[in-house]
Length: 266
Ligand code: IPD
Ligand code: CA
Ligand code: CA
Image (cartoon, helix red, strand yellow):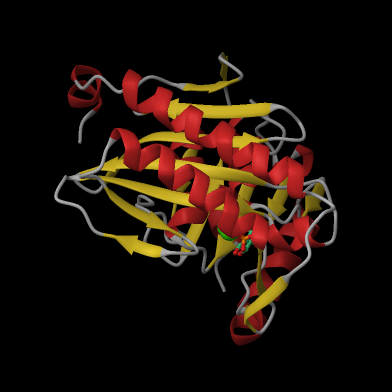
């Protein structure tokens, strides 16, 4: 979908519903933070808490009330089919391991796609009171104010961030090689534990670059749009446009993208 087509669509009402859904989910996350009684293992290190499922229930209820025919893909409940070409892509808690350990770095992420292209992204960090949003073709915002990627142009002045997928042991060697390359080249390197926030922090200029392997559509759908709409570049490690279902994502401020692609070659 082109930016012009997007401008013609009225995404305002969709955004309002997405923000309401996000606020409802965020209330659950806030009340459950430091107050969870059950942590269930999905596989190996992958866990789910009642905060994930309760937040998901609230978000989906709001969306379904307004758009009963829309399709929904949400991390914990999977795909809810619908007759419409609109699809909501939801991560009801991004940063579950942090959350379970009472590390206050997590958020929830809601994206809307139309005919396969993401047109709206909302990421809410309840503890920081930060709402990141983007509409395709209309820029990105933090709490209603426009945001932009940083203008830093050298890797030695760049702060980078990455994450490790739950199946990191299966892809250990390339992950560590890439980590080492970037650690040597950058000013600093972080691992926050929330891919959606990593992308938002690139969008608002806190980080210059983020990369990760084996993320899922709900981790990146909203954040990739927010980073791109803030002027960032979002591709795979082989510089193909990132569309949400590839195994690799690299999001940068654009200035360091070429150099980052070199560091990620293994
Ligand atoms: C995880 C976080 C983490 C990333 C993992 C994701 P979850 O999502 O985004 O930063 O490194 O790959 O799975 O499980 O907390 O929603
Ligand atoms: Ca996630
Ligand atoms: Ca999640």
